[in-house]
Image (cartoon, rainbow, N blue to C red; front, side, top):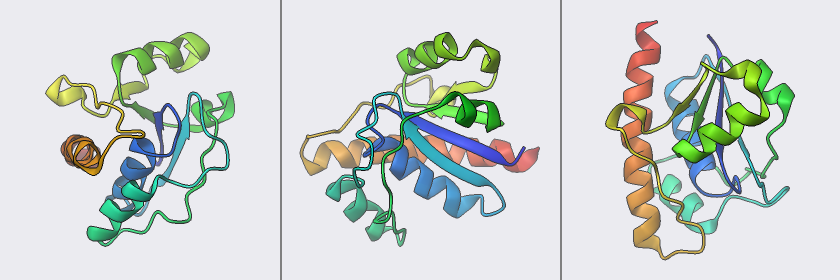
Amino acid sequence: MKNLLVVCIGNVCRSPMAEGMLAAQLPAWRVQSAGLGALIGSPADEIAVKLLHERGLDISGHRALQITRKMCLDADMVLVMSREQRRQIESLYPEICGRVFRLGEHADRDIPDPYRQPEPVFRHALKLIDEGVTSWVQRIRRL
């Protein structure tokens, strides 16, 4: 396994933050993100950029991408933010069932969307993303 896809809705908040954190911790992996309803071409939200910059990670070059069948087929694993997103992806691309998981799967939680919300909401989402990333990275490294 060496190809990871992270998905949210607009691909400007949660998935770019998760992508940046996962890529930093899994340097041998190809990590990319996309959205189910991507704001195609848009940069990551300025609050997301700021919060990751505080952690020494630069996602300022991110531009939102729409999820595609090819992205899903190329991915060894797809991480989503909610049960509903998992359902949508498995419905759109049934051939990848069994490779789609929630980022918060191990804590049995969805990660709420901070889009257009104040910074404290982003910080809460980032805390949940961080927990999910930590959990998945530990499992991936054991493979």
